[in-house]
Length: 88
Image 1 (tube, rainbow, N blue to C red):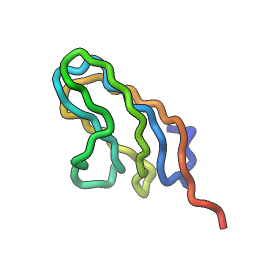
Image 2 (cartoon, rainbow, N blue to C red):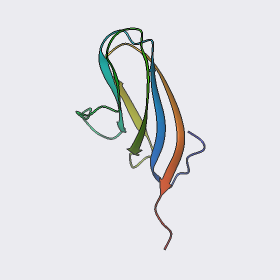
Image 3 (cartoon, rainbow, N blue to C red):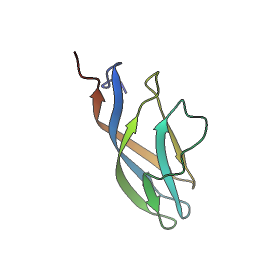
């Protein structure tokens, strides 16, 4: 997102799964990770649900995030804030 400065280390975000196809979960993580983390940020207990959750996610060294969902869904993400290294 353009509102996040290049020196940001992490972001806060609201993640919403909409119109889920089945029980499942969604997660967000630094884009440089090789494997998807075994944790969830948002969970759905069945088809046709809308579920929201707040996530605090570290950015990759290039400032990117990745998203994964275990079920079919529409994904809505709102970045609500960011963290930067304190200046010395």
